[in-house]
Every structure is written in C-alpha cells, then in structure tokens.
Image (tube, rainbow, N blue to C red; front, side, top):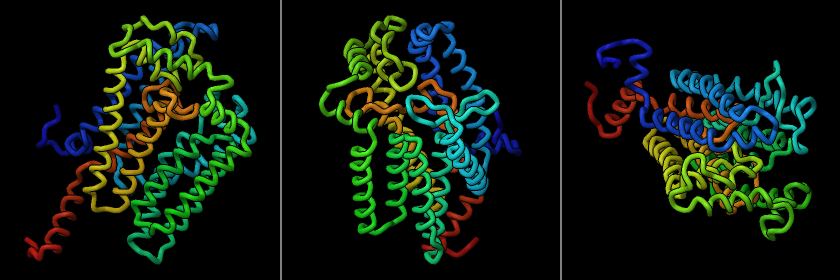
Amino acid sequence: MVSRAERGPVADWFWTIDRLFMITFILLMGIGFMLSFAASPAVAERLGLDSFFFVKRHAAFMLPALGVMIGLSFLSPRQVRRTAMVLLAVSLAMMVLALFFGIEVKGARRWITIAGISIQPSEFMKPAFVVICAWLFSEHTRQPEIPGNLFAIILFGIVAALLIAQPDFGQTILTSVVWGGMFFMAGVPWFWISLLGGLGAAGIFGAYLTLPHVTGRIDRFLTGEGDTFQVDTAREAIIRGDWFGQGPGEGIVKRIIPDSHTDFIFSVAAEEFGIVFCMVLVAIFAFLVIRGLSHAFKERNDFNRFAVAGLVLQIGVQSMINIGVNLELLPAKGMTLPLISYGGSSMIAICVTAGFILALTRRRPEKRAQERSLFRAAHGVPAE
C-alpha cells in the first residue's frame, strides 16, 4: 500500500487518481476477457484455428492496453494536449495511407499493416480528435478573437471526409454526435446548432441515396427483408438467454453468429448470463458517462471540462450504438463494445481514451490552489 506521507510520481498518482474510474475500466476489461471464452471459440473453429486463438490474442492485447491506460494517466493536461496532437497527426496520415495501401475488407479500406500488425487508424483518431477539439473550443471561449470554433469545424470536416471515404458511416455518426455535444457545451448559438443539425440530417439522407451499403442496411432495418441472418440470430440468442441465461458455456445460438466475438458479443452475454447481467453491464457504462459528466460539470478549466465530457460521451455513444444494433433498435453497424469486444486497435484506443480521462480528472494541488483563489476573488475573501 502506498502511504500518504510518501512523495514521488507513483505516490502522487495513487492518491490523486480517480480510483472509481480506474476500477471501472479494469472491471470492463475483465468482463471482456471472460466473455471472450464464451464468444470466440466457435468463430476460431469455423476459421480452422485453435479454439482459444482469439482468447489468447485478447489476453495479449490486454497487457499493452492496460500499460497505455496507466501510462497516460500520469500526464498533465498540457501533456495530454501534446500527446493528442501527435496522435491525431499520425492517425490522420495513416487514414490517408489506408485509402491507397490499406487492406480491403468487405469493400472498406480502414486497416493498414505495419510490421505485420493490422491497425485501424480511425480508432486512435477518435480520442485525439476529441482532445484537440476541446482545446480549440476552450481557446475560443477564453479569447473570442481566436478562431478556435472555426478550426474545430475545419478539423471535423477533414475527419468526416476521411471516414466517409473509407467508407465508415458508423464512425462518422459517432464522431459527429460527440463533436456536436462538445460544440453545444462550448456555448454555440442555437442558430448554428440548428444549421449543423440540418446539415447532419441532410448528410444521412445523402448517404442513403448515394452509398449502396448504407442503403442496404437501412432498408433491411426498416423492412426486415434481405440478409438479416446475423441480427436475427443475435435476437434469438438474447431471447433464449431469458433473465438469468443458460449458464457459462451453455450457449447454442452464439455458435452460429458470424461476429459473435466482436460486434455481437452483447448477444452472447445475454444468452449465457441473461438479461439481468446485460442490465448490469449497461449500468456500468452509464456510471462511466454520468461520473465523467459530473467531473466536467464541476471543472473550472474549459479545456478539461470539454475534453472529459467529450471522451466519456465517445465511450457512451459507442456502447449505445453497439447495444442498439444487438437489440435491433438501430441498423446493423460494425462497431465494437468498448473494452468488451475482441479487437486490438479498438481495445488499445479505448484505453488511450481511458488514460486521457484519468489524467484529466486527477486531483492536483495546483488545481485546488487555483480553485481556492477563484473562490476568494468571487466572494471577496482576502488572501491568506
């Protein structure tokens, strides 16, 4: 146990970190590892691999992901900004390269191979994009003559264009919702909110008219016609699980869900552990979002407030999309459940997000001193 009397980076980190956040992130990673035993063996066997191939890879991804999360949590807000700037520049460059040299999977070029490792750059772009936009919004709030909002709009346009070019419409919607939420927090007039909302709706309608895969997914969702095998099977797994599930390893329907270890792991959890377990899982994600927004509400620094709110919204909205697809409340979209689904890029990128959240929500002596100074100035209390 680290003593409060100790001084040093590790001791300071231990006593200033939001330990509830840390425990929750690690708990989700543990649940994901547990569910990999239930969801991935059938997929591995269909591909002619060892039954525990994906379980072993999941465990291998967990170690560096956990190291990334803890390492980033030591950063100061300024270091978070600088790290995000570098990460954003690298990930955007890799997204451009993926369009020309990337691996094509199901008609999309979202992955690029480096040293034999397949990476999805857009996953790493998301947390960096949120942090940089938070900085731009905060700079405009602090000094209105700085065109921070304009730069944030331009950056959003670049990111959205790259995502659509891949194409990755789901990530585009996720990024747009999170960016719009931060823009709203930055105090944008209702005129601009209405205008941007209208442009977003027009963009969705335009995608429906011009992108065949978007058209197909929306039509299948609305009519139930066409290839709906995966979502229908996922629904059957959820229904079979009932309230308390069939028990660990007793799932049958899960064996024929093609993406049971990634996009449809929530359905596997429902079949084996029941609806009650899934409700607990949803409550854990809700706790993360609510606690993050509570931190943001109390935060006096605009950058910290916008960044923390945007990062927890990113996790919350992504989990909502994944769960909504599993429950057939949203059109089918390949999006992982944060820290639960199999996927190296997704897990490490979410741990980057978690590390940024932990770094920005730490209790710092200089932060408390600044808050006391602001309180005295606001209430006319003389300095000590």
